[in-house]
Image (cartoon, rainbow, N blue to C red; front, side, top):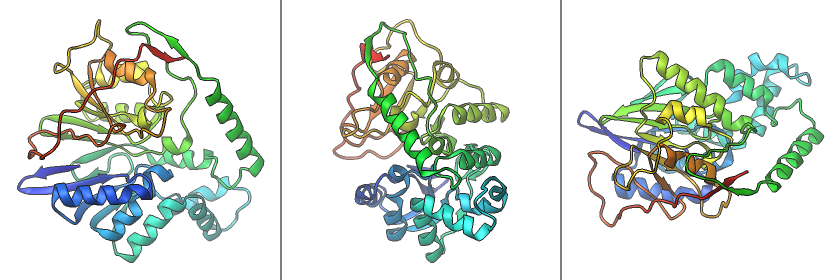
Length: 335
């Protein structure tokens, strides 16, 4: 995103998709923002579909700051939890192997002398405040991750088998207006590591969530309210994890964007914008239950399934862009 601070325009890049996405992101920044300088790059979490594509961005652009959590920075604190390791350096090496996409970003940043900062709760990244994670919860996530060295190969394969079995039994059911059925299963530990950011710009309250799960979304709401910001009332809501139904709940949406309405609002009268990054090639996202829940609260929904979309306030016009079509309200949801 790009925003103006006084007389200065600043570019704030969050995640980068796969490496195949890099040329698209690079062209967007150069062509639409007219610069080869990115003030701040934020990596929400270490998954390939968020971190891999940033390697080419760090190589090709001048970057002011890189904000990224690296588990090996905390190997000394983590060491007692890994029975197989009694050496901090060896644990650091193993963690870099386990998280190769962010390890690559660190290598590039060090070589190019790009400063790296830790985006823990309370950190200020330009106009954005980090709401989650806290250091304590982040370290717990690293310990609990299936990537951690104390887990055996067998335990990882069993977990993967269970996950695939769970996916195979998802079915659809008809549902009337207002009915919401989210998964009772938690999202992945890596998703729960996601950096959640909040900013107030041009009179708009903006929430960027990465792939945060319910724990991260609750922690974020608690922290924001502790700073005197009342909820609900988010104007630009980036829906976590491509519209996954293991990341939010009825209660969390009530808290962030408001309670369910008696009927769908007319197009043009929406109460907030819900932004969903989801590939057309991924048939599982966004989930119908999530789309329904957003419409129940008066959302204007934009997804990337049909191409790029833009949400703006007081920004220069962009030639060739047309109004986005909102997805249909699903009459069915996941059982």
